[in-house]
Length: 341
Image (cartoon, rainbow, N blue to C red; front, side, top):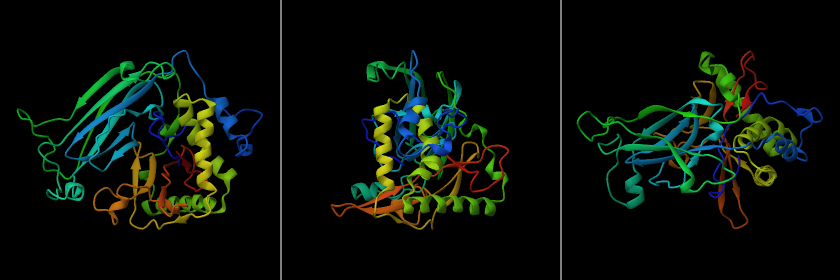
């Protein structure tokens, strides 16, 4: 939804629901003109503003990382990250948190990247995933390496008595571990959602497709104010509250989002080849292209809803709209009731 810069360290894609609306601005009256002020009025700064982050280090695999069930980070190339990945927005409240990593084989990556090696369809003996969970006591005072506090360090399992990866030979491997976190806010998020796997699959798919069609049409119409209310507001409130953003930063992110909406050249692409996937203990649903054997390798793990845009330079850009949906408890399955995370 937003163009993120690497210097903006603490931003991810989640939602907050259940916050109180200001009495002077009903939800239906939040517009592009007042949305920045509205969100800024909801962000609190505490005596300490703790931030949690992860630093993954993989070998001989590609991977996805979920925090409390939400897909937070994915890496489908050979790149190894040095910059920590913030996870506050996935931490809904203080207490026990879960981190799940999913490992996939390299497939043709070595051949495509270096022009040598073999196609690999299974995880290898030397496959590994190490993850450090770190904490910064206060984002307002320091996020340098010297400010990092190690919360937990996880190393992927090996076969007993050897250094061989426990998932050697498998086409896919998943593991979950936990850590404790303390944050000054509490977010309801998808915790109040229904188990969407209990619905008829075809019925659920039909409603989700209608939701996607609604969002697509609003982008084509450049209906900024409606998109603010059904897509941008909840999502940004969660992000900005959990990361303690100041008004200047809130305004910058709004500007990036607004620029996407008003683009003249938006060529939405077919959803063909994507598949319905569940996250957050089956309370979140989305359509994505598969990680294994996608129809188009360029779409590996990408969001199903996206459009192409040609920049002034002639370069074609793909803008992916990661639409993650949940259905609050007690609500019937309708397009209107599906909420965007």
